[in-house]
Image 1 (tube, rainbow, N blue to C red):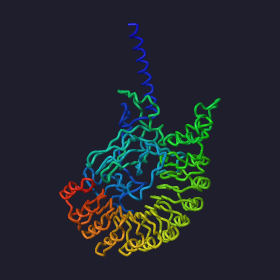
Image 2: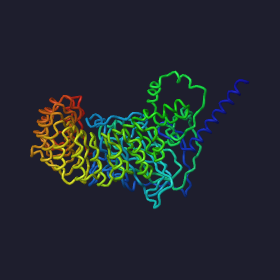
Image 3: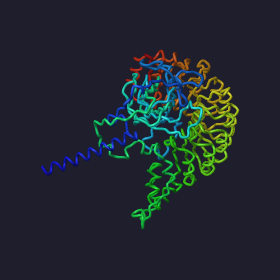
Image 4: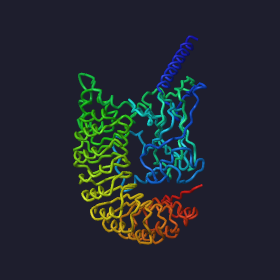
Length: 621
């Protein structure tokens, strides 16, 4: 008996400590996800009834399949009540992102990934939605109508977009996150992740998605926010203790994904004094540098606080040749950039995509950073960086003489005149202007002076008046062009295609999806096939006129073809597709959705004969 009671006492104390720790965790709102939770219910009084509301407005997003001038397949369809749910299938009234799977990563236009990207940051796209009332969230439901499973992170913001006065502080909090997982089936579902409680009311919700495991485009119909007007009280109703919870470093808030206080790590200068640095004194400088290359940015900042030797290594500009700050978008601000100045004098690749919005980064702060760190820049990613204005582009053109790659995707708040400064970057080889307000005059100037361009994206650039003029200039000046995105360009004709085909013989990738003014009867597609033998990717999405003759020309002349999208044509038969598949041995993606002559039986037969090819056939219920 003397040995039993002490053991029970120890177990009781351990259980009590676990309960204490669980209570602290719940109070901080540190952990609550679908993998491991305790039952932590919210008690609400009758006066604190739950508010259920659909999104009022879509205020920001990174990409969408639709046009800027319509509602079909656009992110704006997420506002309001469901249009389609609970029906399953491909519907134009839903919100659809631009890509799915890994196909875009396999194209000639794909960019190399940044080093030091935290493994748990896997978001590819996002959409931000506002709601009428600020509430303390109790649930977020996402109505998915086709190929669900893309949503991997849900966040809430403390700022009220409808408040007349700017907030003193803007804070983002993760409500739920999970690594990308494969969802079997394409049927509609109501996605109801278990979210954690936060300590501020919100009416601004952000969904982040990763579509890499999807078989086709995901389609979202609506988002429902449940919450209470008053802050709910946590009840300590603990039914299960997960031993993994005892590991502090397992929390999402404390990992390298950027929701921790990065600025404190950057600014800390306290170093431990000691007589020596142990075995590190015996290692070559280069070897230590190589080891530190495997650390994420927050870990590098933590390590810099341990001793003077490692501080010297962690602050070496050679550690910051590639700097990816996108994962830390929710915390990165002017102060962060100021602390990084001395370390980034040799930076060559810089990713500031998604950063700086809602006042986090100022024009002055960005300008100071580039004036010190821009001279060696070769690649600059600024997708969805809405703090940018004309001054910023002017600074880029003056401070980054070696720049070869510039991504301004979805920077739709940049004024048209700002793009004139890009023409000064004569060494550009990659330029992404997807969903920007670039105008024809500025673009012609860019094409005239940036003759080294190899990759150019002009998808959904609605301010361009005459794409034939643009195509003629591309054909005349950009002889080295390898990839061209003209997705949803509204008025290119066979004349522009002729100029492209004759002037850019090195083209390997061409996206002409949703270009309604192109007609097969003019011979434009056959001309493309004959004059561009290096084509690996060709998207002719939603062009109703593509016919068997075009497919047979591709089969004869473009044997390197890997991806072909002819969604929506009525003029292509299974026989011509079989010729194409027999000739193009490397073909891996073929989209024949809504092709009236290609029924499910024809797709099954082609799949049997060509099992290595992914043949896509979408449907509407």
